[in-house]
Length: 601
Image 1 (cartoon, rainbow, N blue to C red):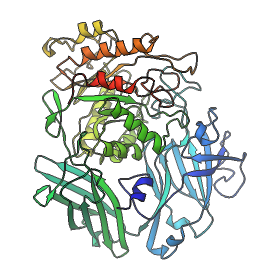
Image 2 (image 1 turned 45 degrees about the vertical axis):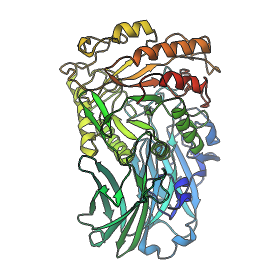
Image 3 (image 1 turned 30 degrees about the horizontal axis):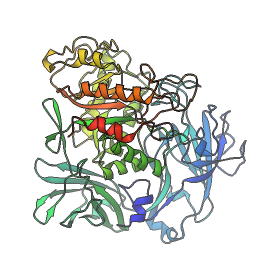
Image 4 (image 1 turned 30 degrees about the vertical axis):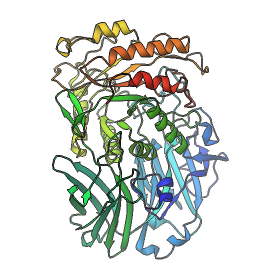
């Protein structure tokens, strides 16, 4: 496989050779009066200011080259684009797809003055077919993004006021993940899923094909260890072909064949296999390059199993904010964070209140880092926004489902957006519906945490949030046998109940999914800088608290995992193990020694 494509493509799990990355300099305009549509900003008419922006960074970030934090509800982008020379031949037999991995919130794309599509949702990828609107040269691409400041939309950790407060940070408006175009045949591969069936020793592959020749086409897949990420003594090479029927092609492959033994993916040995899809139709050949990891994730009793063995999860909370890029990280920053997570002794991360770039998930797959995927929160609900919430939840699952690193889904967090869930049946049903929607979409049946932290309804894992850092308190409250724990009582740290009314503990695994949060100031951000509990006055005090806490927590036999808060400082929140620029605040080896002293996998 061409390593250059994998190194540069925005989505390493779905790569075509004929693509062009459109990140970089675009013309940019604030449309404060919302006159852009009326005054035809989408064509060659002039607009009110003369700014340029560095896509995919939002205008609030320093890396955008603008760096203005003032809120503007409507913004515009423009770029003149010439088709690559090799795309011009036989364009009538091919299609051009225009991709945006994430743009917050309502995005409309115009090509040469015509609207080609609109997407609602600020965190998930979308694509439009722009073939019928392009010409060979001087294509004017215009993008209008509308981002209202309302708690009804999915915001995650973006402040819904004009200022930062508490654990809510600088807003993100507009494009904040990569933009690219790709050339495809008239009949092309649109989606595929890898589903490991380890109980039967099979890999299932399901692919969707679009175009007028779809059901007259043949799809072949080749699975190989060529350029595999981990060394393997026996090279893999297996090819199969299926006829497309009802726009689908399906494969089931035995992995126990003596000539085709797929290595298992794990944190310790993150084996990945390359896949090449080739579709043959009357409109030509479509080729897509991908990869997969073969592993399972199951629940037996009160334990989480990975590859049929109990696995203790040592996760760290990762909010994915960057000093100069806000929600948008660079390739170097993604790789640095993944390496730091492993170096400090963690085996996974809970990506908190954010749907991450495919590039970061690629590095988690490649390096062996477990991932909890989470839907960013909204903060009020009504009968009219529920559909949009579930649409974005569906798109989250479709985006991340093929990543072997992703082992858990979290649709709701701390009752945000379902504020009355303790007693309100509708709020309870929203979390249950979210869980069942994920179960219907995720063929692997990864665990679903209905409402992380407290007030659970139907949840595959009971998760607890407790930021008390007093080891004696932790020992008194939690250092008991599981049968001595009373989950009908409120949690002592928050007065929140473990379960919503009408629901109760039924033996599921228990994970302390937020704890710690020891604040330590390296550099001041504002007068409102804060951490959980008392700020540590010295490194020695931090290490002592960190170690005492983990001695108690790791001694709790009924816990099957933890998630420490957090990886980095984020603006005014200074409880990271790394600072705002993702540099270590503490001795990485000392952190690892404490985490590895007990509860090794």
